[in-house]
Length: 527
Image 1 (cartoon, helix red, strand yellow):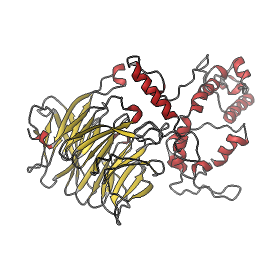
Image 2 (cartoon, one colour; image 1 turned 30 degrees about the vertical axis):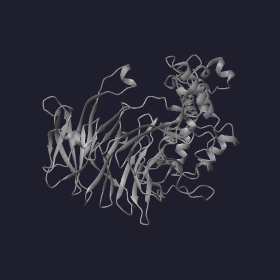
Image 3 (cartoon, rainbow, N blue to C red; image 1 turned 90 degrees about the horizontal axis):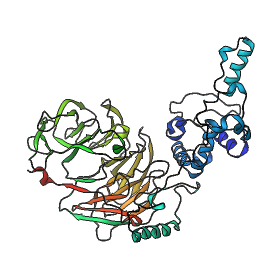
Image 4 (cartoon, one colour; image 1 turned 45 degrees about the horizontal axis):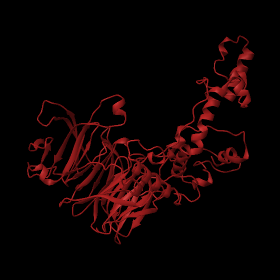
């Protein structure tokens, strides 16, 4: 690979390669994980892992991440139409192809009928040429392909006419001021990398508080919904939802909730109760065994799966379906036990895009489960104490785990979805909660946000775990017990130990509409 990059970059204009999709999403294909013996090259060098270009620093994951950003770069966006014209379009054949010096042997063009050639010698010659040079694909376009528009923020272009003139001018003045700021590249030796447009991005202005609301009760978790709303849940609450499956243009850019309910646990009778109507008391849903006292819950909306963790370490998976035949409107069809922990399950986290469930226990284990097959996948090992916080990226599947450090503070570890340790970093303060930003890969370097015991939110790069920024609020030094990014990344919500919820936004986006915040405190399940 290193040689190929060197030749195609500057040593040879004829050594051209087309990349398969794996070059943009699968670092594992560059590693000889099974230790196969691929022999020895002519220079006596043994073939093992793929030799990468120097800018990848011999890191397959970094190679893929940089490649993704290169694919989404302005240079590629501007030139993509030219490549389409050469391969599939106007410049594939005819006079335009000759002018573009894009001509090949006639036998390599689409439509050559080898079977119609009766002379066996000539037929074998044609087949050999096709095998040697390949075959041109069918011509799809007869006119020049339109150029691709690179990613563009609303702020950088036309603002809606409905906005007042003064507001439009204020937005543009702020944006022009921001453009003058020079920020550090995610990797100093790579030019053109983009941090992204989320709150706390090093390429954006300092975050500011745009919402603050005390609730007087500690939240267990903050949950960002695809509807752009954010929910605050009590410590023994789980939000169950079913999204509308409506098809059509309207549903392409929006998500509607068909049904929702609050699941509560922690009762003396070990009953799981549902409350789907605000004006009615919760109703009995599932009677759990006294041997499996529930300590945590997680819900998978699309597949209607409910997972409960118990004090004895057993995880129970309930498969259910939405129905109008029961008062709860949810009917349990089957249940299955998952065994892997030997002590209390302290947390469950669902990463639906990668179909995994992550469970952590007081026995120090952290296990990945397959949501589709409901089976054990593997354990994330190496934690010196029980995992206290866990989260996963919806864009890459990377997993962040936090455990207390022996000498004080916390250790943050980052893993791939396949369980490989990417890296770890020590934090002198205790990390109480973690969350990922989930901006599109290729145009963003996402971060891990950690809520610290001193009320600070620290951001680490998911590429190399280097700290990139701290978000502070001088008037609050309470531990950040939960945090989450809104689904579009434009707001960061935090909840501290005294029940105060705050939302942060970029200083140049303070007029942007704030997501709706819904709080479900312990009193909600009382009646």
